[in-house]
Length: 56
Length: 381
Image (cartoon, rainbow over the protein chains, first blue to last red):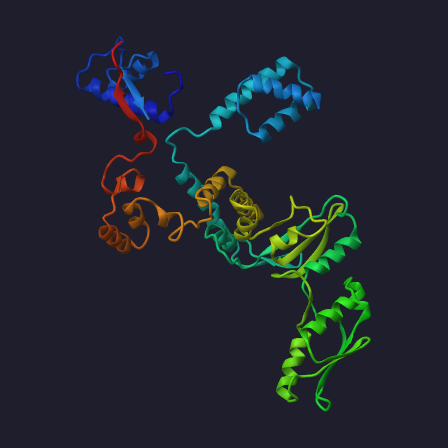
C-alpha cells in the first residue's frame, strides 16, 4: 500500500482493529501505558502492523 | 518566451499535474522574482504539498458541503434584494431571483441580455459600432418619423420621414422604402412624405393601419430590443436587451470569443454543452459577486457539472437532477412520494441501494466518508 490513507480509511481501519482488540485479539505491538483498544490500534497502524486492508 | 519553456520543463519534470492557471501563476512568479532553478524546485515542492492538501479526499461529502456553501450566502441575498436593479440603462435580473433562474435551468429567462464585443480592427471604430448597433437594435417607424397624421377626411395616414434621424441611426433611405413597400401594398411615396391607405375605407381599419405603420420594424435582429453602446476602457461594447447569440455571432466584425449572453439555454443550443457549463459557472458566480458574496468556484462547478453531465442542461429539482435519480427510494424521499412508489410498484423497479438516501431509509451505514471504505483481512505473508 503505497498511497497515503484518507482520513476516512484511517478511521475505518483503526475502528475495525480496535473492535478486534477489544474482543480479545492479541496486540501486535508492545501495549503502551494506555489499555484503550483505540490507542493500541492507532499505534499498530502507525507501525504498519495491522493485518487489515481497505477495499474501495 | 524561452524562460517560460524552461520553467514549464522544470514543472513537468517534477511530475505534478497542475491546472493551467496555476502553471501560469508559477511562471509569472518565477519571472517576477527571478528565481534560480534550485529556488524554483523548492517552490514547486511547497506548492505541490499545498496543492495535494487542498484536494478533497475520497468519500468526502462534497455535495452537502457545496449545498451549504451556496445556501448560506443565499439567505443573506434574500434579505438584501428581491427586485431588479438597473445596470447601464438596462434592466437585468439580479440576486436571488437570478440564482433561482440559473439553477432551475429556465428556458425563458426574465431578462435576457447580451454583451457584444468586436474584433481588434473594429473595436475602436465608433462609426462602425454605431452602424452595427443599429443593425442589431430594434428600430421601428416611430423612431424615424418627423410628422404623423391620420387624415379622417381623406381616409389615409400621412407620414413624414425625418432625414436627420435616419442619418443619425445610419440607415439607408432606400432600404427603408423597400421595407415599407414590402409591408404595405397601398402606399404612395413622394420623397419623404408617405401616405398609406387602408384596404377598406372605414375608421376602424384606418386606426389599425396607423398602429401598424408606427410599429413597422425597419431594422434589428430577432428577439433583440434596445441596445446600449458604451465604452469600456479603449473599446466600444454593445449591451442589448434581449438576446440572439446565433444571429449576432454571424455578423461581421464581432469578436466571437468574448461576445456572450446570459441565456444559458441559448448558449447550449448555439455553442454546446461545455459552453453551457461554463456559462452556468460564470453566471452563478457573477450573481453572487454582485451581492458581495464569495463562494468558492468549486462548489458552483459541482452544481454546473451535475446539471450538464448528461449532455443537456437539466434543472436541479423535480424535473431534473432529483427527479431522474436511479433509485426509487431516493426519488420518493424528495417530492411526489406517492407517485414514485406507485409507479415503481407497477413497473417492478429494483432498488440497488447504492446511494445514500436509500441506505438512510432502510437504516444501514451510508456509502460516504468512513462508510465508503470496506475492510478486508490482509493475507498472512
